[in-house]
Image (cartoon, rainbow, N blue to C red; front, side, top):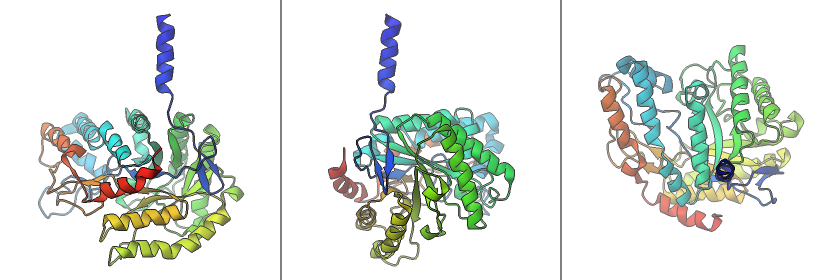
Length: 399
């Protein structure tokens, strides 16, 4: 009898409060067919550390040539200093503190309904890696947030950028072994989350900028879509254009990729005023909406920011532009913590002054672990006025 009660309680607590999402034409919808616009934020810097926005010393000498350039070189430097087991303890401490359960509560309280979770393919091979991803999905769902799982770095790298986890590579496209491994990774991930409604979508390749031609891009996407749908039929996949242009993407119906949506990223580094961001988006929208109607699929602005010249008003202008087109979106990013101090509105939360910096060249293991506690959001402040503006705008949309 006791065993039966315990089993029933376990089943009850494991059931998600979130409704499974589906696609209907250009919209995300719930089981009742009601439109759902995903409004969220990226968890950047957590499972893919980018030195420009995370609190790590990058050189053993001040002003010296960079040694830490990305995820791989960061943890290699830590391992040289404290050994393999020490590196694992430091990395786990960093991850335990950069994002906590309380952070999902903060995100929900600001009015968001989902998080986009960037990770590197090698996380799936780490001891406890899949469990950490599962914890993130579960914690998000507990606070009423869907998750979009974003493979930010694929085997071999899909560009030379540091956000793939290892800068300067771009070997996904030309190495058959890397493509096969990418399929294997997505099959493993999709099988694990196949029946989990808390995962809204699988973002297959983040910013595939390094692809040599569109034919190769379509072939690789096709292999990954089929790897996912073989083990998780009916689950939504996201297709990115890699800044090649929405018009270069194929029709999901012609490719037999359905259910598929498109993820576009929006940054305007040439902006001279805060208004330039919204103006640039509005100028593009008519053409983008036309292509969307032709593709008959949803659009998800999976990353955007309004730096330089970021203000709460500029952020809301972008969001209103997306939502006017019926698009879902996710800001980049939840938090930033750079050694030099605040970084404008790159993070919803940020270090208020010069950050505590973990130094993989000088710090002991104990010092590194102690410093990671300073990386908790509790010790940070929100970008001035941003959380308040978002909360006020998003409040009417909260379920």
